[in-house]
Length: 298
Image 1 (cartoon, one colour):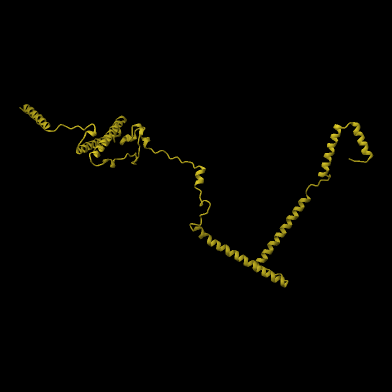
Image 2: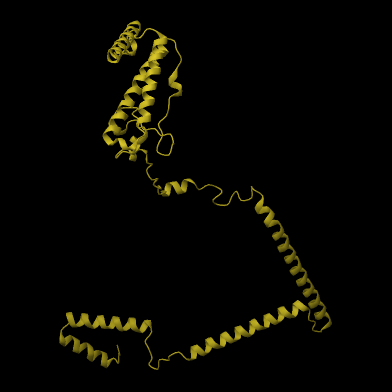
């Protein structure tokens, strides 16, 4: 009895389940093309369905233990769903619905920074990587920033930055230099005036001494006179040293010919060479006898 009762109960359960399924509407399938949908509510419903599928696959792709091939397949499926979502969002705009593309998510790198990878790996524009797929071989390099190379400045770039400030023409515009030079200029002026007054005092004392015939020494005047006396002594010492150096120079005891004598000897030598070349020996002898008779030394 118990067994038949169980069978009947099982058949009853199956019958009830079948009747409930008959009452339900047939399961609707998402249209292959978004342009086939004519109702805004249905288009929004299909978009929500795609969003749920994307959410499930993004949660699944976070697992790094799925393996490289499964991660790549999941990433491709997610990108395919994102493209399909974009078609439905454009269809919603055409049917007069809201624009969901304004708040679309951006792709981020491993540190969470937003990056723009328009065409990585030649997979078409807008291809994105999610979760553990960002750490796959060949993908990590796409998110790494290349090291910034410091460009060496050329001579043109250096000269292009040179302006009036470089040459110091605008140093006084900030007012700092004027504040520093003001006190220094006053000190220099005070020192110059003091020195001029001391010199005038010396001149007056010197004039009084000349008129009275006495030697009067004023503090600074005696100092200046003493320094001038030292200069004179130093100059005399240097003159004496120069004279001693001249005396120590080598003296030539053999008389040397001057320029005129050297010129005469050169001309005489050339004359003798020409005579020996063009004149005969007899003519040379006659010339020598004539010079001896006339007492000519040349």
